[in-house]
Image 1 (cartoon, helix red, strand yellow):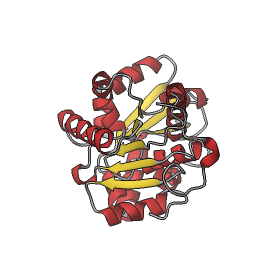
Image 2: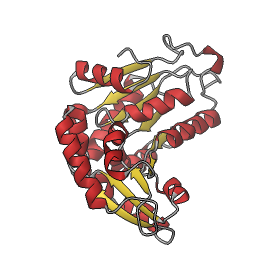
Image 3: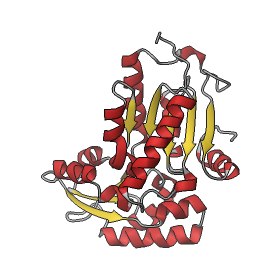
Image 4: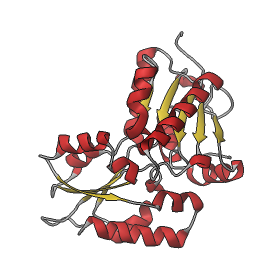
Amino acid sequence: MSPGDRRPIGVFDSGIGGLSVLAALRAELPAEDFVYFADTGHAPYGERGADYVVERTRAVAAGLIEGERIKALVVACNTATAAAIHLLRAELPGFPLVGVEPALKPAVAASRTGRIAVLATRGTVTSRKFELLREGFAAQAEFSIVACDGLAQAIEDGEPGRIAELCARYVAQAGRFGTRPGEIDTLVLGCTHYPFVAAELRRHTGDDVRFIETGVPVALQTRRLLAAAGTLAPAGDADGAATGRGGVRLMGTGDPAALRAAAIRWLPGSRG
């Protein structure tokens, strides 16, 4: 494919959480078109078995590659990445694939106390991929890992009371936050939904705790892969208009109106 490839980039999540990654992608790659697929009709992934998540990830990837002719796929879901990204890479050799994972490496670099909390779905924290990731940094920091059952779904459903209750519960489970020795000074948001409730989480951690998420590193990696493949859209064409000019197409298996409303709320500059 020649330079200036105008095919869209696919972005996939079990629901609206991947909009936080899409926002970072649009900021880094303003000339690119995107197709965002929310598999809301089959969510939540984080509390389902790995086989189910693999099946859905394969199905969505095939639909976007064959039906939407995407030139790259960002699996903007920690649970799907943990369960299926290695299989997609084996089945799609050479196709640009980017996954997300809890950002332990930047958290270790940011922490001064050496104590880090990770909030993520059960599907992520119980995966072999996450176990290997944590083992790789075990000598550099102490991790408090919390499986946040129900939080992603509460965010999907827009339930403020439930969100507040779960945020308070899971931050308390993680341990004592602060900047003194022995306290947790860094919090990894290990699900793409969680940046949307960062303000609620910060009510319980305090303002001095660093929050680490994955959107910017994912966007930079996507740029690197497209540049290597020679398929970046011409940078000078970004004007937020139609195909090849920073557009976003929303797709999914749930309520289209709910997805549009979420995009208007969470995606800067979106008109749904």
